[in-house]
Length: 529
Image (cartoon, rainbow, N blue to C red; front, side, top):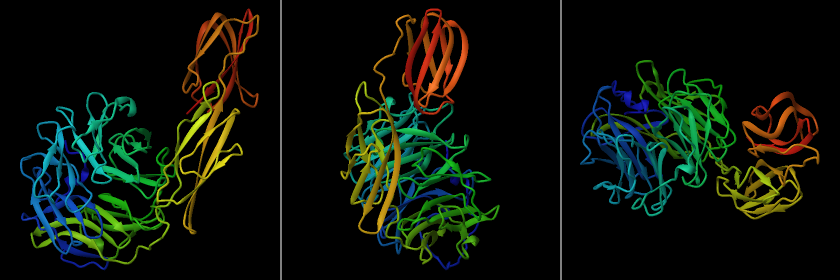
């Protein structure tokens, strides 16, 4: 199944223009109307890209790519043999010789293929199984020649994600316990992901965003207000990112907490829907591309205010622009459709409108080993620095009077309460960023019981949605008080067992009073979100 709306776009005529900010390059594909499906710009000289047949909306899959090693002055296109009718999801490269492509099979299933000779030959890496009928590889990414991850649709009941530390010679599937469960009808999307440092995000067709902070080994998931469409995604640093739904009206959402929560992005101007990315080396600049000739929604636009306001790059709205990728504020490429091997197929950014910022992409961020600590077990919390932009200094405030300048400290809390942790990351004398989070410290050493009270059990503790109560006697009344002593629940009951909905209560420490004919039993529990 084809899952990226880009593939439905087709060639509608080549505009022989030289833009003020863009210059045309020949992608070198022998056949005309080859559109650029995906671009991986390694640096200012090395760029790889895959192609699709843009001659019609029903054109078959092709297995072609192109590569440049001199900034696009010359591109060399090739065809990958052995995969007729199969699809190339995207491409990830680390240098001029090594690249990886997820291939989905027309007959079902798929594989990851790798080249180490600049694309002359490609070899399948069979330990990433992607077995049929449900296997479907969507994304592959390598941080260097050894470390990478790949992601496919749910297979065997959960997302098929692999990691490797030897360039893909050995792929190891991530256990189901380390991946949040899929929802009904959910699958991944080809090529729609983003990486900042060790952090990686990918989107699903149900509007959810999966995230790993350790190069794909462990995952969390969050939901956006969109619940039924695919989304492009781009982050400028560890905290701020944008997703855009790629069907009209092209709703977009942003996050300021690394993807834990999402809000509507109320933008103005043309935020084109074919592709977009953050421009590295800039503080808040994103660029978008459009290729919708039929609805005259094509060209390139940019935002210098984190996606709030979009400005069309002069003259670019008379041409089709496909996938886009930038390496810095002066070097970027966007796909086009070629006329022949000598004409068109790629645009190279040649402008000067994106302003360099020496602190671009610099943002403090960290992970903690637990949201809630129980002194009955241990008050130890481990903190892992995930700041983007290569900080050189760290100052931690643990909220209880203690501090640290270690990059990845551990701290032991000794008193219950809610503590605000603050990390200030610095680089040189000019770049600094602050990130805060909190940890709840409780003590569940046992239920306090009056001598004449009934035997009572409550679970789970901590609770999230429901709290179960089992008593040796018929319960007449249940009261819940927050940590300030305010009563937040007071109801009569007539059963020895109760199930309370506590989902609307805020995270924190609560006290419970359970009344029966034998008297009152007091307990304590916590709620996490």
